[in-house]
Length: 76
Image (tube, rainbow, N blue to C red):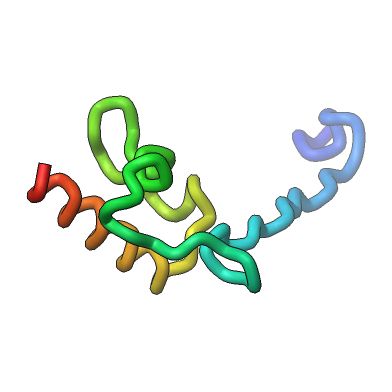
């Protein structure tokens, strides 16, 4: 017996549905360094910026978000 047939059948490909960016769309929130409640959702418990592969934020908006978080940190 081969190893592939001993598992019980053919594997189905795993397709995860892409999440849409929370900052794109008609009534999406604007990224602002003064909006701490919004920025806190994208910061880990240790104070690090959460990567876009977890938050599903687009590349462009992730850069804006990172800049806003860093600006808010600097201001205090």
